[in-house]
Image 1: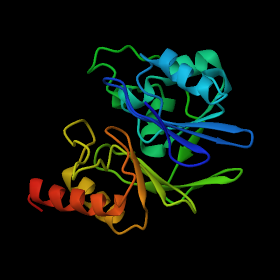
Image 2 (image 1 turned 180 degrees about the vertical axis):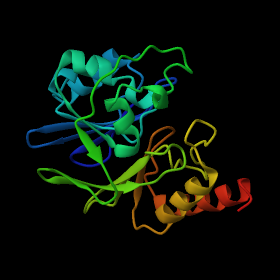
Image 3 (image 1 turned 135 degrees about the vertical axis):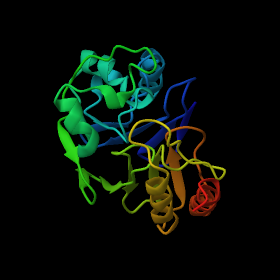
Length: 226
């Protein structure tokens, strides 16, 4: 399902095991936030074509983390074009050294070939895409290199697999997961000012997203007894 969030931001709700994907079109940049598993790239291409784009036109892919359901789609995107890839350094550095273990490809029976991350992200980085600026916040817990991003001056927060709607939050039982770090990341998010949350799974939080973040923080504290 393709959902227009703002003039330049579109939200594609996941199919099956895939992550959600956000598409941003601004000036010469056609940006994806996360790439799914790659199993449904033809569906993604159809969605993009309704917006006058295509997988060949993608210039940038910013990954909220490197799990296979978010990063697997990089392979068909690289086969179709030459997008620049962005990922937090905690997960980008192993990938750039040929270590794909944090993607969990082996866990889910996927043979993910090696590739290179072009831009290693850190807390506070601002990605300047013409009229759209993405501010990076490092939010470990679901994984060591998980990030969220604020689309500046829009009230939109891209929450990855850290924050989900309905009081939900990312799991911590995969390698590099941490309940303590996740709870602290949710606390940070609950203190931020935003109206709309676009998560890595489930539906968009279109209204009162900060209230949803506060609920998730409270639920996580209770769940992990903190």
